[in-house]
Amino acid sequence: YWTIHVIGLVGFGQDLRTMESQEQEGLASSMHRLMAMTGQRALAPIPYWTIPGIGPLLSRLEGYAPLKAGVEQEMRRILANTKPESGHSIVDKMVAANHRDNQGGLPTERLVGNAITLYIAGTDTTATAITWMLYFLASDAQLQADARAEALLLESALAADEASFTTVLDAAPLLRSCFWETLRLHGAAGFIFLENNAEAIEVSGKRIEPGEYTLVIPSRWLSTREECGGREWDGRRWLTDGGKAVKPMPEKVMPFGSGARICPGRDLSEMEAVIAIAGLLCDFNLDYKDHANTAGPLRGIFNFTMKPNRPIHVAFHPRRSARAK
Image (cartoon, rainbow, N blue to C red; front, side):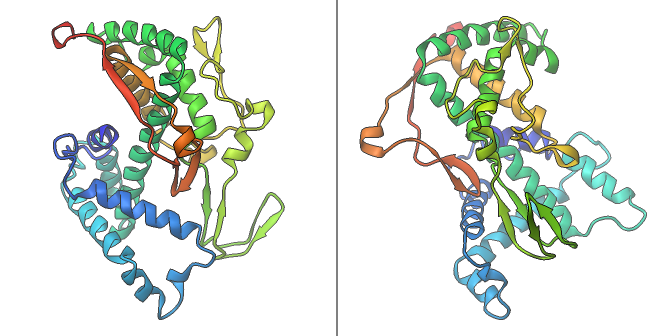
């Protein structure tokens, strides 16, 4: 719910109230179920929902159509409350740009689709990265201690209002290295959808015809090659200059995509994860007990985004009293 709160304020310019009402049946839970069902569809042997005549019926029977309609209705309400003239949020700017378009701009359904994409890209993905980071830090006492020392220095800079976006990231090379290493092995967006292409295209020697539905999952395979770091997680892998800076990742590792369609929320995601983890390390000691003997090995699985195959139970032990905070 932390990531939903952040994307609500930064992306939509609105308080989605997820911090105060975590149990309500609202946009967060509806979106979660919609994403899970979309992930199941992505792995279906045939796109049954597109079958003429019975496709829409099957979509209603499985609950996908009414769920999607409910999410779209909520997004229309959120879009109606935007303030395009302010330009404070991403959606404000998007709606303002759409109003300025001399050709009439995007239709409402396209605006709704972009808003849903922004919500998904700014919530579930970063939350998954934070979850994996907590697991790795809780599993390595020395790494956790070093990251906490860095977090305490960062906390002091933030308290003194001496930290800008750049200085926050510069002051947290170890946490940033942990973030990028986590995305290398457990990036939430490990796939590319190719659908409804107007012309034939070729990907790695395979010809994809116009309108052909294709799901490509290249990131996991590429990022685990030896030249990219292999299969072992190492939170210090991307440190350089004596641990004072973070070196760039190999070009083959693309957790946020690349080129013209690179994720515009890349910097926000990194800042959000660093600040969240730093805050938790300042206030808590993390502890993880391996339950692999009873629950099986922990690994990533595809569920629209890449997620842990089972819950990760990390214990948070308070380090200081409320008075000391």
